[in-house]
Image (cartoon, rainbow, N blue to C red; front, side, top):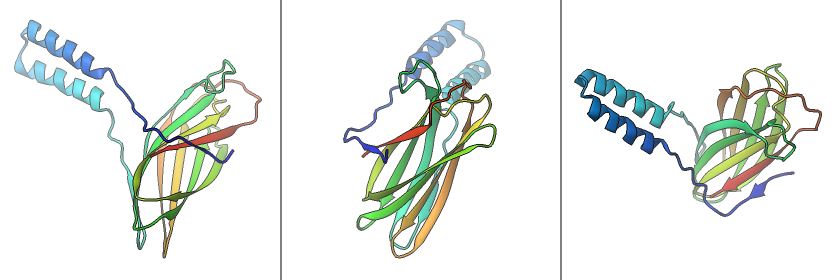
Length: 186
């Protein structure tokens, strides 16, 4: 399957602000020292903001592309009652005077060093794209997995850059053949 295109925007809702409110309320009741209060706020802000996501910026003669892997996790996407499917969330921001060709080389490296690689050729215009890659039946080993995405821009010149994210889904025995879906929202 080459990919799936969905015309709606992705919205991710987090419930952390409620946690922030409860901790701040608790902080006021406890009336501890200012240092203690500041440390609680710092921890909450770290949990709320999370680890900073670093993006790679690729620039060719006419196009600027920013690629950022936001997250990767596992679930049961195909309904086989096994949490052996991996979802990768990433964004692409494109600035170009016209439609440009972008090749995505998306790879998943298993703990055993087995590599699954899928290539997609996209025609993109200036816009922000929220992308989802689903690796069906890939989480079959215990240990750390690495999601890699290489983007190549083809206009008057070629430019490329790679972004990676390492994460740890649980492993599970599975004999189904692996495949992917690529969903792009702009």
